[in-house]
Length: 532
Image (tube, rainbow, N blue to C red):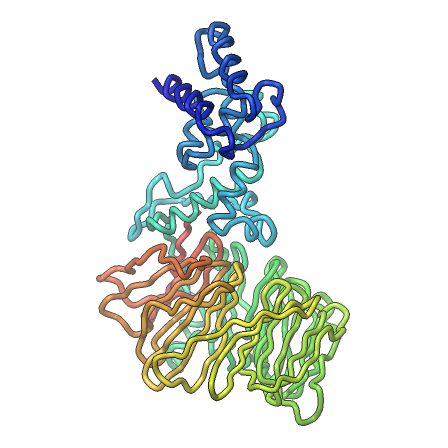
């Protein structure tokens, strides 16, 4: 019945207006032309009697298959691909799947910034309670055909693999399909337990993750590193830590921490050894650090100079000095070997981290509030008495785009760019007198955030094109919300609950396939949600 239906559709397409646009495939241009439908119809009728085993679909030219396929959903395309080898070959082409990835916002991210084809599915040792765990959570790797398979089929094309995996991952997030593992922060013989008994519970300073590694620093100078896939604590390090946030980073198996006395220290997770320390800042607490696995960018309290280090040898490669002695550093960001900074006298500077060369320097006439780096662009927030806007500037060409920001409902005392999504969207946060407000901006429109929360209550966690939002002090509901940044606003993927019978938990880190929550009870255990 399906074959007869598709054949009827094919004949109907031929009888339709010949100027209607459906894909032209040069592979069989001698079988069909849009200017000669009668010839194509006679070709089909002539070959029906010759169809092998009476299979009418085997006689359809590829152009007709393409004309039919373009009206089908991705789910229908996947179903047709398993009907026969010929249809699989016709559908196993990037021209079908790349536009679908682009439409869902996956094209740039999964082809340029991360390789989802290398993600290894998480296979739990045992089923954990507290989540909707079933066999649909782990991606079925046998859905991807590789070269040299026993069936002799061509390997799955690149964009079909990306689409299948990205859709599976997003479906897990939408339906809360995940494996949950618990990481114990305090071991039975842990020094943190001893410290808690002697001087009260240590509190968490900073946290960060990379792949299967997750690290947290504590107020007593302890730095713990876990392997979240194995569910074990890999290493424990100690340092005299800075009291500031954003001073612990982990990348490529190396942990970098900001300390007191203007020093940074680095440790290898694999060997447990300390790498050469990085010294040179003023003898103050480290204010913030950025680390990409190779280079460290840091700034210290009351130090307006930015320093660039190589982590392997601890050598300071460049000192990115402030424009003059009167320029006080206000905000700094680092991404993709580019450093950007703004100063209190409204100067904006951009450098290449490898060479230390300044590629852009300008002084703005309006008040510069904050900045964030995208990939090849820098976004700066400008405020004037009558209006507020964001300027997105190309790092290489200097070309600018101005995006107006609508006035917030309440007067704000502080407004800053909180995150630059991979899709180019910007998330701005405002701190009014009583409520947090947020606005999500794109090049085409601006969409106000959907909720307001009480003073200092909102917790955000960002990665790629996703974010997690929850209320720090809403112990009764214990909810969290996962959003996806799209071109037309923030799309709610999932609203979930930690459980009415569980204590309050907060998001501390997320990546493409995992979200880690921290229990606020005395044990401070970590709950890792594996969505892959």
